[in-house]
Each structure stands twice: as structure tokens, then as C-alpha cells.
Image (cartoon, rainbow, N blue to C red; front, side):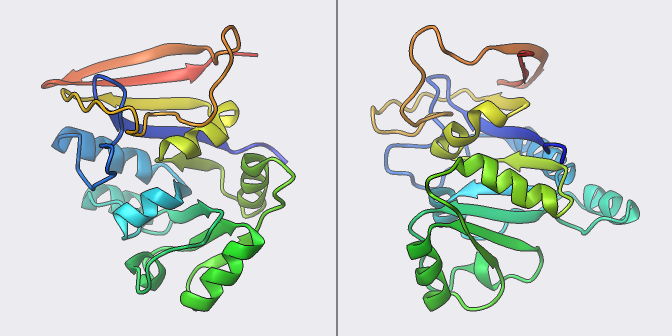
Length: 224
């Protein structure tokens, strides 16, 4: 089975943060960044979030630009890409709109204890898939999605999710925004344990675009 094309899209501050230390919901990007998000979502079969991102966003990832929705429908696609969340704990607030929405197909990838918690507090709606904690998390998720015919997979964070998928990501779309956040505990574009010196992932810069005070950057993974 061919591996899906995996691309990530995140906005970050000049000092590399994707949110404040308290993880409060705050839009770093401008209207141009939100349109870029819509464009990238419109090309996806599924959008993946980590658990913390879902707790903050609460609602499904949708394509908001109507012209892009129409284009998807004209091409025989659902109006919005499927949504997936990866969570070990399965601990989400009750009546979370993401679980109640019927606008998008939803998947939850979780551990056994997370599956039990979700089934107790969020009935119906999302398909719950249990992962083998001893195996590659990203590999299992991509295999499940690939079996469902999903060829374009968009990651929108947070930093821990990007770390889990780092070696599987084909392109990084990064909006560099004119903010400074600071904070040693603030999440970055990629968190996790990190790579040792000399083992960093190499990327090629393939596109730079400026709109106002923002830079839109696209990097491709270097050929192995």
C-alpha cells in the first residue's frame, strides 16, 4: 500500500511558539493565514489533531471558504475533510462539539484506556480505533487511513503530534507571524524529546511568500 502524502500546517511566532504557555486559544495568523489554512484543508482527505489541540479548538476542522467547499463537492468529495484526533488518555470535556457534529467523518486513535473513557462519555459519532502502544503510532495511523483510501493527510498540531509524525511528513507549511511569545513551557512547532545533534531532519525551502507582515514558507523533506 502506498504511503499517504503527509503535510503539516502551523503558524508560529518569530521565537518558534505555536501558542502561549497557558495554551489559551489565540489566533496568531491574519486573514491571509486563515485563507491559507482553508486552501490546505480543501486539499486534504483528513485533518489530524492532537488531543490538546482538540480541547482548545472544540469544533471540527472545516473548510470555511465557500468557493473551496463548492470545488470539493464538484470534484465528488465531501464538503469538508474527515477529522482525526490522536489521544492516549481519551479525556475530553462532555458535550464537546467535535463529537456531536455530523458535518464531518471523525476518527479517534487512542490507547485501550482512552477508548474506554471515550465510549463512556461520548457515545456515537466518531469511530474509535485502538492503537498498539508498542508499535509506531504514526505508522499505524497512516496505515489505517491509507486502507480507507485517504491519500492526503494534513497535520495541524500541536507540537507533540508533529514530533510523532516528523519522519513521515513530506511537506511543512509554516506561517511566520509578527509576534513574540516567550515562555520555556510554551509549545513549539515540534516538541517531543528532540533529535540529537547531527541527526536533525533536513528540509529544502521550496516556496516563500510575503503577505503583509507574515511570511508563508513551504519546506519539503530532503530525499533520503
